[in-house]
Length: 228
Image 1 (cartoon, rainbow, N blue to C red):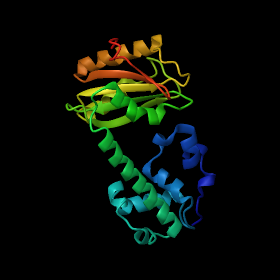
Image 2 (tube, helix red, strand yellow; image 1 turned 90 degrees about the horizontal axis):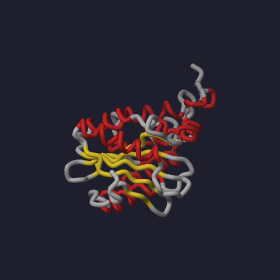
Image 3 (tube, rainbow, N blue to C red; image 1 turned 180 degrees about the vertical axis):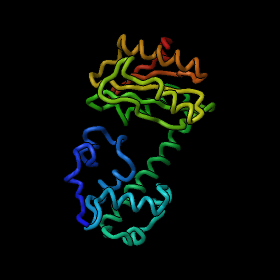
């Protein structure tokens, strides 16, 4: 059986190109691993090999992180260098997760939100809209990118925003977006979108706690300015 290489796939299905086109959050776990290992073997592509590795641990990244270099090398197409790349990437992810839990165990002010989000979106050259989902202790349950590349009150899907909130049993949310221009003043569209999100949250009993506009060096908080 002839192997179908990644290079012959549609552009949208190639992990490196997909990351450039749609951003890192659009990639599956297997596609991210495929980028790490670079190539597969004679029978399967890098993505196929990555899927087989994930399947061996029931698609559980925590279990994958426990595999040693030697155990990873048992998969055909995974040599020492590729195995080390996988182990290293997963270790970085674990350390980052631990660091975030230690530094920001819960949200007590807009400054806490800025500490989380500025490294992610503060210096981007395009706009991104993110949501932080909180429990009743104001601890962050999850953060999620809702849109990318500019938005208005009609382009941000409020239904998807709160669908994830209901799945997490979140009692509060904080929304954030960046201004690549560096200007902190909210636009009319920013204000309209905030009101739309707040109104929907009131109906679902999920409170909109704040909306932050973030730049590389500063931020604007709707809650702090009493315009929420």
